[in-house]
Length: 113
Length: 130
Image 1 (cartoon, rainbow over the protein chains, first blue to last red):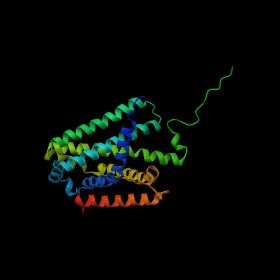
Image 2: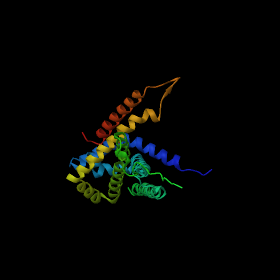
Image 3: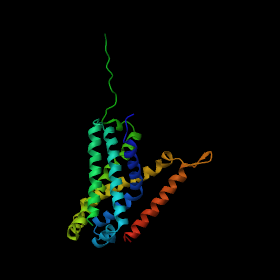
Image 4: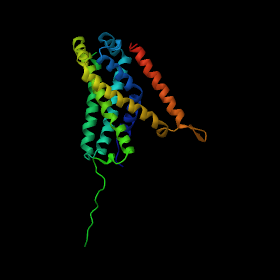
């Protein structure tokens, strides 16, 4: 029987969707405040740098970025099919490569802090 | 020999305009575009943070302005839509069984909304938003 990677990407999709449901709106609100010129103190360089320098902060940032990316990648793959694009194999490669590259980049950035 | 090829009645690319239920389905699905875009914004912010104080502060300065505000508002609306639609289907995706009975779905939904509100207020508080 051919092995399928579906359980892996689906669990990342579900975990990312749940995390996004709880956290995305409030995190977006923090950036919206910054766009309005009232950046909350956690978005100031010294505080955010201290947060990302701690191992817990690194874990939090990596989890948020990676799961949001994998959630979006998998759902976008399915949604593009619904929009009538039937090149699923190529689309799957593109969206998962972007998610994997984003995950790897955030690891590299975090190791640099 | 007559041949009557099958003619597809619904368009592959515009089928979801046929019924409001399909449009609601697609409105839930496209939230992923905005979650993905926000994840890329976070990645960008993280890259600037790793690059140093001057780089990060120029990112924060570039974030200000009417277009950012408009874009983030749209992203926020779709993120809230993802949250509410996600919580509303949770009792269907993960029914809670107690003995022979199932816990009524509305308890599961209300519990998720309550946790969502507490988590959001806690993040705003620890972020120093108020």
